[in-house]
Length: 214
Image 1 (tube, rainbow, N blue to C red):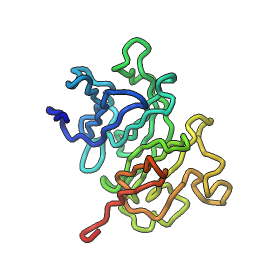
Image 2: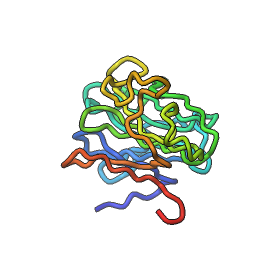
Image 3: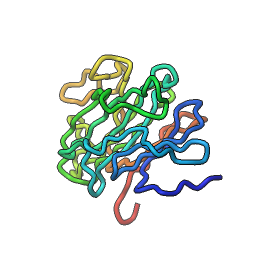
Image 4: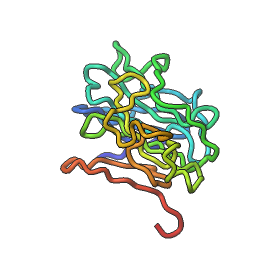
């Protein structure tokens, strides 16, 4: 067991497939740090501090590595941009330094999706056992958004990042339905701040933040 010291509001910890390093998101600072061989590296893996709005529940919210990261070097982050809108972006690891990403390699995968509230923005990213990228979005403080299929808010979205933009998998449940957001995978949520796939069953477990009682 190890203790990692010197962090500021760590919001996510993950690792690429088959990699021994730990990658840690600092939500308010907009940094992804690398913990390797018992120590935090002094230079961030990714620094998007100039691109984010970090207040209340906003900031750098999610991090996920492509299943083929070892060969393509693709890493995905979700964040609140300078207007507070939700964004998912792809970056590529440096060809010469495996502990660094060049912010200039940014490619927008989703968004910006305008968020009116500085809470209930969700922001978790995970690749599922099907190789698809999943993103959680809160209801932006609007309680009816979770049941409204015309908006991505209050949902978990599913992307085929290996397909052309807008990366809609053709087997998503609402593809072709008039006035529905075709990226929706699951709806009726409030603020699914974190979720995870069961490694044995593939089931999707959602931590949907409630108020007062549950």
